[in-house]
Image (cartoon, rainbow, N blue to C red; front, side, top):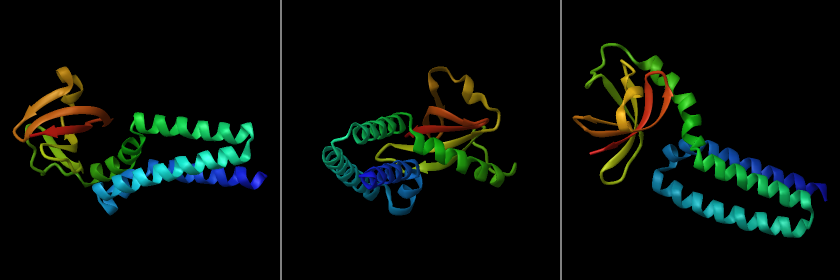
Length: 163
């Protein structure tokens, strides 16, 4: 009986870790394939979780699954995968920055995620850190409009670029 709890916990931890590292998975396999794989994986996860919870018929097993779904909802809602990737990627980009790079209106744009049609997610380096004072969280630049999602680190912001 304890083996079922261990299996449930391992599957839950694996699923949550895969979600946490999903930014890197998207980069490796492609955005569209990743979305289809995630939908299939979530469906299988939900079905397996329900089967395991109904098979165990123990409150502990059901509580474990409810906690996992709560973490899943929080991770998706708060965008933990991108925030986690920013913790890793921003220091790498910061080391690679040199003062001789072309600065457009004080901003250097780095691709974050590919967009569809007219928008794209970008990581913006603002040398003056003026984006924190932006009114309405949007800035016009020659490439389009930047909509600030959140601050990654001092002078770095994750934004949506609309053309």
